[in-house]
Image 1 (tube, rainbow, N blue to C red):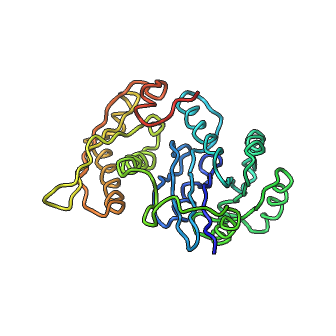
Image 2: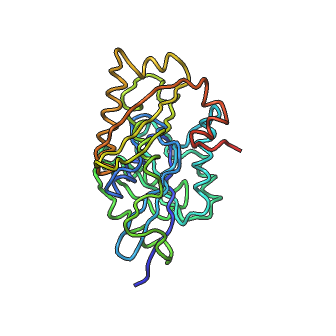
Image 3: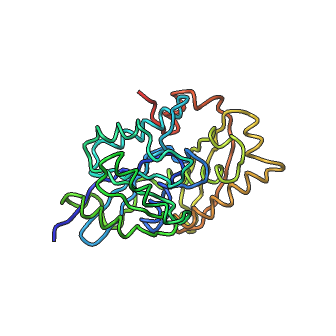
Length: 298
């Protein structure tokens, strides 16, 4: 039998469930998730190994109207992922309050010259009778190769999605060893886990002004313990106070929840130390975007 392999871009508006879909397909967490839009800032690569095939997914930041240097950089990452892939999967929500597919995005997809699937996510939250008019509307808006209702949360429809992916991808070699799930470093992944906890625990605007750098990542020689020291960067002193919290309680909670996820990810005990540092208006500064691994828009 021939081996099917290729690169698949997951795109869509913020908070439609791209990261949840990737984590569910892979069976483990590599892309951070929160209920807030624009949680994902970088291109996240995840590899699904199946008998006779290898699916290489690219989870991209949510596509929204670009405002400010940070958002422009994030959107550029998403659109760059449309080139040099073998398949594009556009995720949408089935809710009437949201336009199904923005016209400008359909225009970009039409220029991509790549097969495009439409995955209608979150079907666990709707009356299934409402799907038929949504599918009809979508099929008239763009020549999607497949339109597949799914639930990234429950896994419903994902078997069909993977079957269609396998049928669509070209014959090719395995690009990664069988034990590889992502090309991202452990340092990057633990930094993302810290940022995820900030998004989940802080209710104000603070998360959008947060970046994380890993200062130390070291495995002890005498014990199966990994020492991690990280800095959470914020834009204003007021944000620093919110992150630390009264008597340091918020920072302690962020660290505790992040450490628990890190130990699952790394398969070892973790000793985590966190600091908070003010980098004034870093999201507007190309130097800091580069320092924090976010590509400046061209």
